[in-house]
Each structure stands twice: as C-alpha cells, then as structure tokens.
Length: 92
Image (cartoon, rainbow, N blue to C red; front, side, top):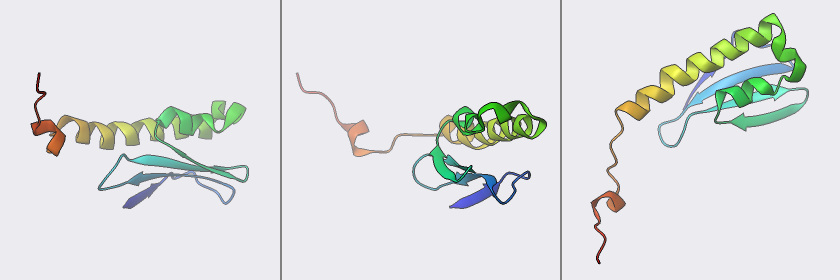
C-alpha cells in the first residue's frame, strides 16, 4: 500500500490517499477528532463542513479529484476480469 498525503495537512486536520494492490483505493480524513474512510473524493472533501469554502478547502477538493482521476481511472480502463465467474455460462 502506498500512502499519499495532502500537502496542506496540519496536526489536527489531515487527509491521505491510499493506493492498494487489491481492492479499491480510498481516502482517509482526520478532522475534529474523527477519522473516516471514503471511497468517493467528494465525500472526503465534504467532511470539512462549512470550512470547505475556504482556500485550503478548495485546494483539498482539487487534490482529491486529481488523485481519483489519476489513479482510479487508470485501473478501470485496463481492467480485465480474470475471475472464475467470468468463464461460466448459464445453463438453461
């Protein structure tokens, strides 16, 4: 797993993007004493509440969308289903 950190992180407010080999990539937000995991980049940004309209909140939104676009779309385009279920056929 590779962890990418938002450059505007401070002690009580931090956001990271976790790239995994297996399973979906995800965001982790730590804000106001609460830590949450998010699959959707906009949900990660929305944890800020009304603070999402500040300059740092807008920078976080851009970062979240850039991480999702860069790493999630790359996997979806080249994905091939090699599972056992893909080879089965329905018997009628």
